Length: 176
Length: 273
Image 1 (cartoon, rainbow over the protein chains, first blue to last red):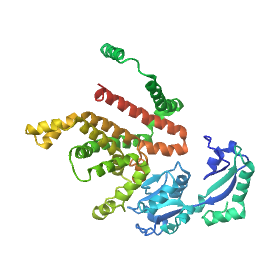
Image 2 (image 1 turned 90 degrees about the vertical axis):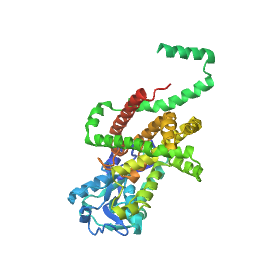
Image 3 (image 1 turned 120 degrees about the horizontal axis):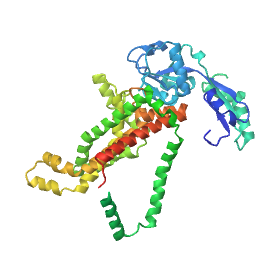
Image 4 (image 1 turned 45 degrees about the vertical axis):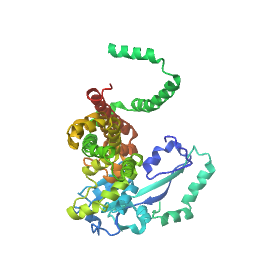
């Protein structure tokens, strides 16, 4: 919106996509979904077996700040599950949360399923109850400012095709 | 004031006009520095200024920023002054290497400084793990960690400034003091340090300013939580993601606060000769 040149816009939440409505060449389509999980460092120093364990005293866990989409979901899940403790730190993005966990500086962190998949065996994953109630949806749209409008539309089609969807599934994304 | 203006006029008549070859590039430099600031001031929604100032998040962040920058300056005075003296006055093996190492945080991207601090003082860091095993204390996510991060990035400015002042004032007076029977500690207190005072003041202001704006190392090493580790720059950055308008207002609060303190200091201690 500040004028960065682009052909296609894909966003991590529908609100951001809506704010760019005027720039879309055609309506945005949802191409993937994501849910949150709790990850712990491989050796799980705090011995976190279930989600409720983050409420034990002495457990340092991190989440995104609630001005970021990943923070809104984490905050909703904490309230859904009646977590009474507070995170040790509110990171500006989900990669920073993951970094805190993989470097063993936090006992647990709220990340997306895809981040847990990407981190592979550096982390252990713990399911979060009610995570299915807080699904993140990713929309994609070609932009009017594109200098290659055909190519932009073809790319969107590819992302939505079976081939594109299989790539997203392998990375841990859910069906739109 | 008339005397100062007279002096200026007298100097101008003997030295001649300032040459364009210096005036033009100087003007460009000034424009580059001033223009973005003026734009920021003009673009700020001032209506929300006082409302923002009253929110708990802003007050907490201002408090942490003020505390961290003040403690950083004190840490620089207490630890940085002796280090600058060692580098300027004592001949020891590896001095050149140490001086280079002291300057490294100047060129380090702040985020890298944060990663370095995590690997040294994080709970699994070189020193941090020892600290945790022996005392149970962990530094990340505490206000202490904020101060450590700020001191790490600010100290080089202070040390280089003071070391420069110590070298410029030379060792002659030290030697005279020694021949008059002063031991080295007395010489340091009564002769060396007073001569280096302009460097101490300039270095303190530089370190304080660097600490005010510090963001990358702090958020990487100390984290970001309102009331314990969230400084004004961290708050501004996270607000920028959600509401750029409010972020501008918050930037103004930090800017106004720093300029006010700088102006107050200038009147008291930093008056140019």
